[in-house]
Image 1 (cartoon, rainbow, N blue to C red):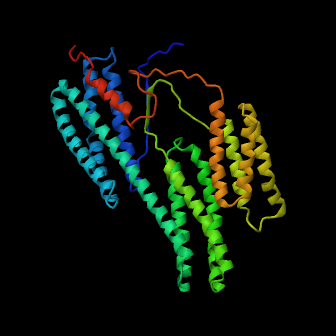
Image 2: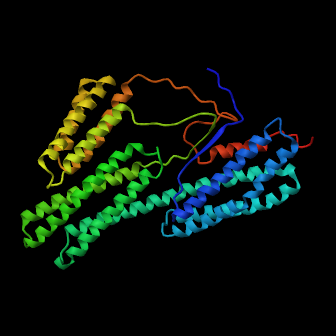
Image 3: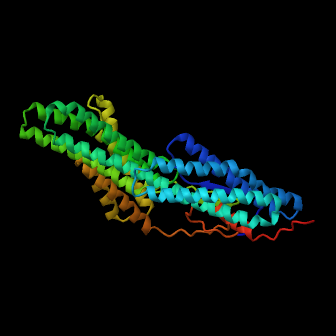
Length: 418
């Protein structure tokens, strides 16, 4: 197999910008995109043997047109730092990072003035661009960490309001507390879902989990509120209290599932700079089949009470149907009989047990799939050869490819005189 290096290599940027507003995130994305595109275009021209020295100089000097983008990055860093000032564990790091970015921007703007007068100083300019991209990457990671902290706070509020309704003593506060419970839980669910889905391809394995938890949460919240109301109307009857406690446990099981999802959320800061690599990691047929089983069970468990009998029958039939399809995929993957037995046991547990059993069975089914796939034959991989030099093809820092180009620009031997 031969790989031909090309001057038409493509740069791909992937990352997450967690911003206080959609407009700020969009402007930051556009600024970073323009900076990276300018670096790549400058590299291509400066490295092209057929280009004249005038073209090469013009390409290098083109970076001096990035002043508006640099100014925005400095402004964005200060604005987001202020927005996150209440997160004690993150704010000091954001503040220091924002100051560093502002200083790097100041240095670069001074460098731009020198570059237009003295083209030979371009290695220093690209070195400082490298530093700015590096610090911007770290700042964006901190912003995402702050967003995770924000979601965790939503979770704490949801847990607290669920507990407060269970132990409510003043009956006149019931309506307000029930509204707070519903609002806080849905805020936590919505914020978690946004974190999971903010980056395409980063948390595909969590999409089904967050959808199942959302579906069940929307059912158990009203049930908990109704059971709480019945308890208060019964004048503290112990039997009604037990029913309320059971409904409370179901809500907590859902919140626990969202907490586990938040703990597992990943953000990919990946990059490619190669000619034709395409990285798509869809779920395997086995993973998709088990996902279908879980979705069928979650829909069965959340059937509305007023659903017509023939519709109910469809939901009931979906569970054995998807389970049978999953077992066929287990056979194709070379699963052992005990693997299939474990799957069937988990399906029954998820279908028939309490809400907590559904989420526990979901976790165990994931482990079973991993076990089966791990026993399958290894698939050989062919390493990609990147351009302009071999770059690590594993997840790395956002803009790492652009950083590599900056480093390359420092060492170029360009004939600047005809």
